[in-house]
Image 1 (cartoon, each protein chain N blue to C red):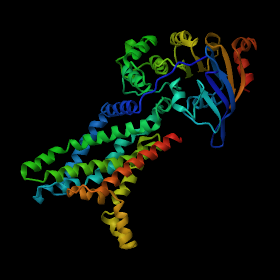
Image 2 (image 1 turned 90 degrees about the vertical axis):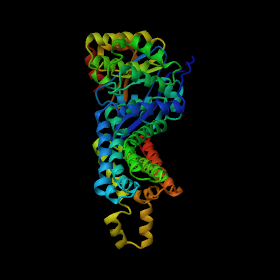
Image 3 (image 1 turned 180 degrees about the vertical axis):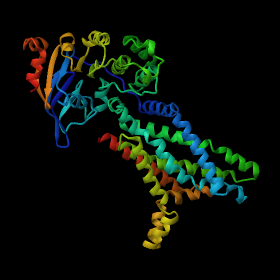
Image 4 (image 1 turned 30 degrees about the vertical axis):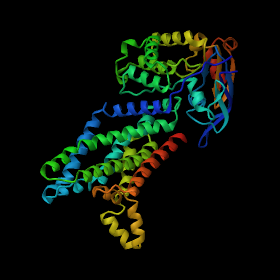
Length: 252
Length: 234
């Protein structure tokens, strides 16, 4: 007795199918539009009202990108909370795990869809760049570098959010733990926390801790520098998060 | 070669031993009625067979592929409908089945979707969002996603749960139509389903197989199947 051969999708087909489903899934709920509106409102108001972008009278966007680690720390976990938690809650995780695809393929498709969604949120802020271009003559390369840095920073926060989402079936818990973890990454080398560290450790140690924070790694981008180190840093955090969340789902 | 083979499967959740050395095999053309009280280890055994859970010891094979060693090959031969027929509520029936067809690597997804819609009588709700489906349609969709690739092994966890008599009849009719070509396991609480659908009965209680025999033999155990069931699972 023989069994008829059954097809399995290629890795690319599987990843692409998951990516498409997930990405369109974001726009099936009103939450996506609320998210995009909130992101945009915060990104613009922080730049103008806290960063005094207008009063500064300088044609660049570093005061706009300055607040992006904060924004992503809050909003990447909000967008990433559903990655796995929702699958668990709906019971669809049982389907995913019994289809002839690997958890890696599913995880990558989901992650890229969420990242693409965050890229959409970022893309909506581009009028601010055009406004600056209209009012003055900014360095376009610096602005593009800023956007690239911000998108990489979003990916790093999303990696952290993916781990939080893989650990629970509650989106609320996934969001809160994801936010706290990202918050810690923002605080490394920032403000009061930085002063506290300077009091407790030697300058060398403090410097090393700063290097692990989001802010220190985003800074070169806002100055127009596409440095190797921060790119590797952001991608490492993003893909470590992706990998760890995959292992959590595989070993459940 | 058996299409489904469980060998001394064991699985614990912390201190609780959910499955304690379950073994059986299922050949083509057999429909197994998988019975047992709630919490007896039925669903856990099914999850071990489908590769959703990994056993602490023992092995499961689907179409001669080890579920842990060759998961992709094993899963490609398998159709599985989990309890409650989970699906992505925000998608339409057609979108969901197309998605499953793609992940099954089918060469002509749209034709497979159309055939499955017809087979499971879902055509009239094809454009409806899954969240808005009645329970009957929802359960049939769970069934549809499990058979879209015409698998040689079918594992269904309570496929007629909560359906009205007409809908139950409908699901059983489709199952009977395809059963001869497949090895099927159906978990159920409905003892009458056994008489109508199954060729063999496996009763599981406290994580162990209590009874594994052809339907005809089982039916001779007594007039009152409920009583027989109680005695076997006590």
